[in-house]
Length: 395
Image (cartoon, rainbow, N blue to C red; front, side, top):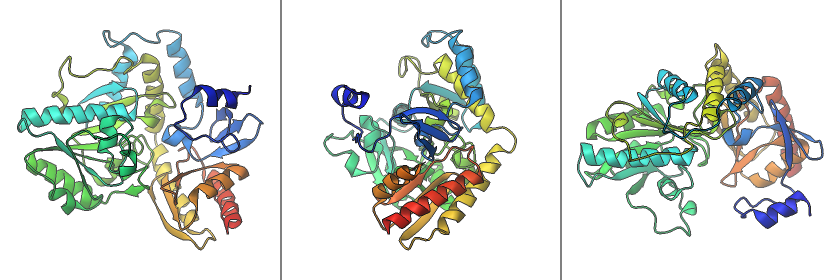
């Protein structure tokens, strides 16, 4: 029995892997991965925005190995240096005053949801537990997180949903205004919607949400799980909008390839949860925090994020130059880019893979590009050429 047969026999089928088309990846380095047959691919998925610094970045690998030889786990009953130093870094570079560590984006959003409910009860009244989120949003796969997700397809089969969530229209401030009541405790939003189709917020919208939250004593929560950690050309996507959240969540790219989640909070929000109200056994693991410290240092190095912005604009320019008549839209921020087509996006993904380019499709028609931030303009040119060939095959 080969390994793909063993996978089908022993792993619950939640990813719809197809033996004839799903790659068996064996190795990664920089912007490339190799499959079990030795074929090389240009990876413009980056582990779904996890490998922002490419595969097996030597600085991150060194940090992991060094820490793994010293201390791998202790639990949060004790202090560890990598955790404390990472919290210091995140406070320094963000709007947060304090940090909570967990293991994933969904967990980080769960922590933010719990914090918001507690804050509503303490700050407003015992009935202030409702959170307003956006249509097309995505906040994770746990029960509260999928309820917060404004896409009914993720709710189907898991009803009843968690009480206390209402949905407004992304980039439509008035739709949020109309949903605020005495029961509202927070607004949860992605500055750039990822799974919903790569839609950046407008400045007027996010600044309007900040004013609305201030007016009604609500927490403004930014889910930066996908768009954070340099993906948009700023360490935090909210920096593009000159808006500070009361609470933010991070995961994906922060760990440099290892699993980590973070909730940051400022002011009164940072003091809302007290001992015994929330925890995570593996949260702030010393090996993962060592990797994350190395990743943050690389991201904030002089000129790095400015180059991400420049390459993002170059990428969108090249996409608009494609010889394909069914392009609907090119959108995104930094190197978080979407190409909406009037066609079968999944087929384009398969054709690109056959030609040596890994991309992703969301919603059936939007091709999502999440290249490593270390990708060069030459890598972008290669990707565009391979994509062009795939699109011509589709025609």
